[in-house]
Image (cartoon, rainbow, N blue to C red; front, top):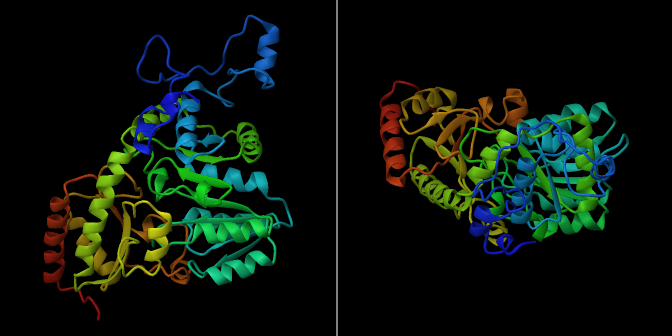
Length: 403
C-alpha cells in the first residue's frame, strides 16, 4: 500500500487506489476500453491468465480502470479485497448465488430494498433456499432466527426507503456464533458514515450507482471483504458476466473524489428537511435516523459517523396528496434514483418497491403515500423554501387529506 492510500477518509476518496493505473504522468485514471490485452511472451500470458502474475487478459475478467475503482472502495471500507459489478443488484445477486446452495437458509429483515426482497421471496425459494424475514429493528427475533441456523445473515442499514436501523455489531456477533456469513448493504450510509467490516460484518455491499458515483450517470455495484470470500464471488461474476463497464468505472471514480464533501452537505440538508417536515400538519410521519424521535436513533448514533442524506415521509392524504406536492416542487427530480447531487423525490411504489404489490408494501410498513427524499447538495434554504411553496399549494387544494 502506498502512502497515497493512507490519510483520513476524505483524502482517501481523492487519492486512494489510483496510482498503479496512472500512466504517462497523467493525474487522472485513464479509461481503458480494450477488450483484450496483447502478450508476446507466451509464458507470461499464461502466468497472468492463471493469476501467478499481475495483469489483464480479457475485459470480462478484469480491467485497469475498473481495478482502480475497486481499489478505492476497498481502501475506504478497510477491506482485504473487493470486486465490482455492472449494477448494485448484480452485486447483491451474484454474492448470494455464489454462497448459497439448495437446502441453505438465510435470515434477513423485511425492509430490504424491493429488488433484494424479491430475491428473498421469489428467486431463492425457487432453488430450495429457505428465507426467514424478520421485523426490522426486532433484534431479539433476528437473533432467535439466527440461532436456528443459517448460511447468511443479510442486513441493510439504513433501509430503503424507511431508513430503519439495525445494530450491526450486535447482529454480527450473533451471526458469527451461528457460523453465518454476515452481509451488510451499506449503500445509504456510504463508507464516509459507516464501516460494517469494522463492526464485525464479513461482506459489505454498495450500489455504486447511488452515493459513490453521486451524479446519476453511471451504473455499478461493489462488494468488499476478505480474499477468501471475495475470490469465489469474483469467479462467479467473471463467468456469469455482470462486468462493470470501464467508462462507468471512470465516472464512479471521478464522482468518489467529492464523496465526503457531498455527503456532508447532503446530510445537512436531510436533517433540516426532516426537522421542517416534522412540523407540517399535512405530514403524518417523518423517518430520519438523525431525529431523536427515530426509534433507533441511539443505535444510529453509536454505529454511524453521520446520519446520511436519505429520509422519507408520509402524507396524510396518501397518493392524492403526493400527486399535488411533488409536481409543484422546483428543486427536485421526481425519479427512481438516490444519492445524486440533485435532490430527488419519489413514492416508494414507483422507486424502491415498484416490484412489490400494494399488499406486500403494506406488510413491510410502507404506506402508499410514503415519499423517499434523497437530499442533494443545493443550498439548504432553497430546498426549505421550495417545500414551503409546494405545501402552500397542497394546503389550498380541495383534496380530502384525511385525519
